[in-house]
Amino acid sequence: MGLFLKNKLYRILTTSRILNSFSAYIYNMVFVIYAASQYQSNLAVAAANIIMVLPTLFSLWVGIKADHTKRKASCLIWTALVQAILFVIMALIINQGTLVVFSIVCLFNVVSDVLNDYSGGGFACRLCRKMLTKKT
Image (cartoon, rainbow, N blue to C red; front, side, top):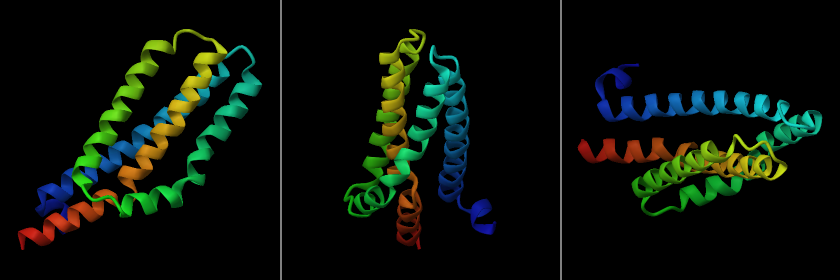
């Protein structure tokens, strides 16, 4: 707790990670509600639940790739930018309740969760630790 209160960089990264996790949780809830509003809602909700679990299958591979990343700070920025673009596209097309749009939303959800795992799973913590050791 002392580190959180005393170190601004650590506080920013930790708060960002908490907000990111909370927003991912809210997004997944809304995703299931969106799936329930589809024409064949039972099938769509089942697909949504499978889609939410799918990124876990890539976690080990994504973690290995994140560990081997050379320019970590740059990758954090790029993954956040790609996620933002995906969500803007999703916001523009989501009102068309077609199966194609639902499929695109499912794909974007998987890609966004994989990017979130890439940038979040200890990646920011290692970057923060590296920056802290440089200061001392």
